[in-house]
Length: 420
Ligand code: HEM
Image (tube, helix red, strand yellow):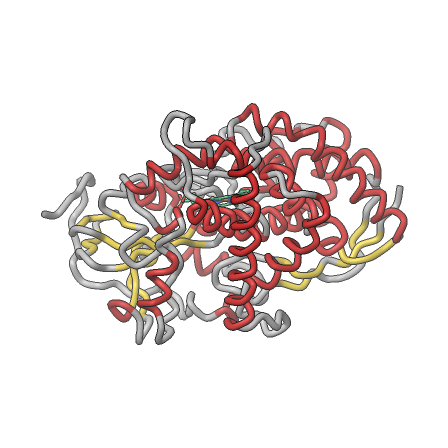
């Protein structure tokens, strides 16, 4: 069956990209987002076929418009995260085996299995839980800024942006303070990027993930024996409505959190600071008027730390007039959708008072919408508020260095001077 909800002619050929670009090659992103290329794609071929020899189907559909990313995201019964996973295939030989493993993560599940699991873990992320965390986040932010000020100058990524996200997850879950360094180290080793500067090998990432499971396992078993008033216990408790997590499910969830909540928020913070450096009028406005809520959304839109996720069509579907065949992979580009003029007027302007900011940095809606969105928002709000209060004259002293990755829009270094 072919689904369509658009009154436009249907094409079943495979249009190519209007510009010469390889979206799979990490080098393409080494100097920042290819924004002009994305604009050309949205205008001339919003749904086009990208070759990727040696992978499932030898290629995938690239979706670049805001409305189309939302349409795909909201139809999990057609666009599956389970079938070929939500991470863009790499074509490595052991892909089938890797797929089996990744399907344990909720990110790579479809309803109804996904919904059951999500209903349980949602308990850790209620607005009340996040509000209760805020005073701790403020203490962490104060401490981070104290240490940065004592240093005088340094790298904003390492000194400021990197710490809060992990501390927040540890606090949320209830990781004892003495174990936090270990979790820091493990999650850094887990994220294996294509960037040669990060020496993480697949083997080391694998060892780190095993150690992470081992740690989570011990913690879960301990709480089963001695329940406490914390999130781990709540997730494992059998008597709570809607079921509980098994120890194994908890281990996998723990791993997902430390990856999903860490690098993303770190890069939102760094891109936000960099955007303020590039737009000093916006920094002045932020310091003077503190439009916290709109500023946080704009920072997240501007950063769009996750550039894309993958889906696989479970039936034929027509998207913006383009026929997508059952079994085809579809990659949705949040980083392009968030610069789409049709959804976000003056999309290339960093405007911390932007109204109706319907960005898709946390996903285009639908069942996988970022579970940690409110936590990330709270971290960013508290941190920037603290920076504006305590070191309002922070200045950039060197060029940012971008992460070499086709998945995460990252800044790996941003030299700054901290002044009180
Ligand atoms: C600015 C920071 C963040 C960004 C930009 C971000 C972005 C995303 C995106 C794009 C998705 C997929 C949405 C979809 O497929 O529709 C996602 C899912 C997810 N995020 Fe985030 N995220 C951020 C912070 C966090 C934090 C702080 C946590 C947890 C501590 C977190 C946990 C998760 C989880 C568990 C999922 C999977 C949800 C599911 O499959 O149902 N994220 N995030």
